[in-house]
Every structure is written in structure tokens, then in C-alpha cells.
Length: 411
Image 1 (tube, rainbow, N blue to C red):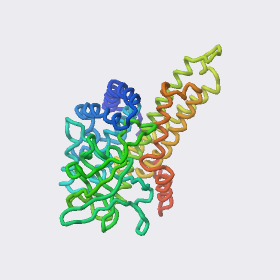
Image 2 (cartoon, one colour):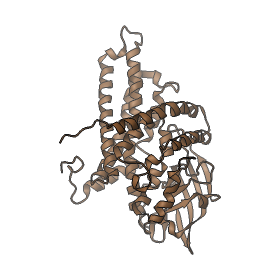
Image 3 (cartoon, one colour):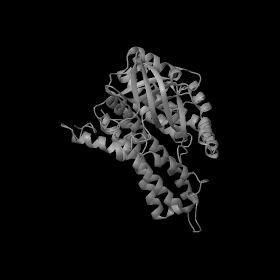
Image 4 (cartoon, one colour):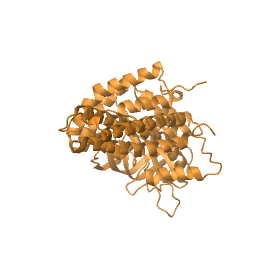
């Protein structure tokens, strides 16, 4: 039986709907975001668009079907992510907090926990948001290190029927929620007496106990609400522990597999948009010569090479997300390749295309620099390639029984 990479009618409909929303709602929104200099103010500009997406049932499309949503395959997710991220990766990151924050709940939560924590994101009104409170200001590459190494510094101390949580978190999107009182759901990576653990805090438990230290002013992904916060005496029921004490490292690493694979689609979107800009420029600009610059071998070589790299990035991202969502044995390795190869190739592609345009690209008014600033983030977010992802890939390859053909399906 042959393998087809053609989109199904349903996938074509998904692509068209996402592209229409992105072009009609997100493209003009990002113009406003880029004009606003205050990082908090510009992140709040995204809230009405999130409300529109929720009303259009897009948020439920990020919740797997077994848990009440409409999400199906990883390939569908990759198509949706690329179309949205082509116009605003900031928006998708804002909307998609549940993808990572709820992943440990799906894996190890009780039926009651799943029902309660997923419920806000099955809504068809409002702008519910979730945060995976993982990273800390001191760095988190070694968050799971055993004592006496510092590891994760946020603590959860048992007090009767409650956990009392104190610490500082950074970088995760929407840590303070829209109004500073926290997101609807925050999955906290913290240290309990039994080791690194995951505990879910809900908005009513966070309100009044979360303080924003700083709203980061990022060079790219400018619409993402990215902060450093302090959590003080957050009281959460003991029953909000996900899995068992000490399960936090495994559950956290598993949660970041899908998000890591998705970075390949983000990078594909940035490279795709940059290629379109450079292609149009090369076909129309003469730069003082007799012909459009695309007629010159040096320019056409760059366009040809980068287009091939974009196609490779896209197919790898589709395969990786599909394997992760389907819990295929190759999912872990493919997700790591999509994150590392996708993010670094995407950055290289955008940078190469800037060379085609020349100095005109080094202008805030020219769109290429925006794609470059976004692409710069992808090798370092969702687990830095150097500090986290390559280490994971090394551990996988060094494990007993590793088969290099498993990821291709030829093992």
C-alpha cells in the first residue's frame, strides 16, 4: 500500500479555516502589536483574538478527543500550527498553553482531576489560559538534579490537607494571567519532600499570591506575555498533586515532547514567510541592473536551497507531531529532531534569505527582520537545544537497545 502525503478534505478545510482566521484577524493584530512599546500592553492586545478563537471552537481543537476536545492527529496539529504561526506565532503560544500544561494531567491525572482541570478549556466563550510553570530565573536545564544540587528551587510544603507553594518562575507564557491574578490553570514544577513533583494550582488559589517582577521585552514573539513572577504562600489542596511525589521529572520531560515537536512547525512557518518575502523581492527588484535579481545564479541558488530545507522541515514536523500524539515508540526521537533540526534550520534559512535582500532587510519596516527575531527564539525556547534537547538525544542514543532505524519505521 502506498503512502500518501496529500491532505484529506478535512485537513484542507482545517488549513483554509486557520489561514483565513490568521490573515483576517492576526495579520492586522500583529501590526498593532509591533507598534506598541510596552510589553504588558501589547500582550493584552491578543485577548480579543483569543476570545474570537474560543468562540470559533479553536481552543477545543487543541484538547484531545478522549478528554472532551476535538483534536485528532498530530499531522492536523502541525497544519494548524503552521497556518497560525505564519501570521502570529505569538498568538498560537498564547492560545496553546493547555497543550503543555495539561499534558501531565492527561498522562497521570485521576478522572476527577482531568474533568476539573480540562473544563475551563472546553468553553465556547471567554479567553481561558493555562501556564506550565517550569523555568526559573536561576535556570532550569538541571531542574531534576538530586540534592545537594539546587535543581528546582520552588517548594511545596505539606500543611494539613494543603500544599504551601513558594518560589519564582519565569519565561512560561501567561504566568500572571490576563489580570495578574493567574491563569485558569497553572501546572507547577516544584520540589516536595518526595522529590520533584507536579502540582496544579487554579486561578482562585493563585489570586493575591502572585506578583509580577518584570514583563520581559522580547525582540521577537512580542505579543507573548512573558514574565518573571514570585509565588508567595499559594495554598493548593493536596489532591492537586499529579501522579505521585517524585514523578515530576518524568512527567515534565514527557509534557515537553509535543511542544518541542511543534517548534519545528513554528520554524517552518517563519522560514516559509521569509521565503515568500525574499522570492517576491528577487522577482521584482533589479537593484540597478538590467534584470530582476532572481536571474542571477547566486540568488536562485539560495532560493532553491532554502526551499528544499523548508520542505524537509515541514515533513519532519508532521511526522514528529503525529508520532508523539499517537504515542508511537519513535515519537521521542522524532520530536527531538524536529526541535533541533527544525529550529536551527529555520534560523539558517531566514538568515540566508536576508542575504538575498541585502541591507534593505535590516529595517524594522521590512518584514524579514520580524521573522528573524522570531526564529532566533526557537533554538532556545521549549528546552534549549544546547542545554536540554541535545542532552536528551544523547541519552536516547546511548540507551541500551537503541535502534537507529526505529524513527524511520525501518527498524
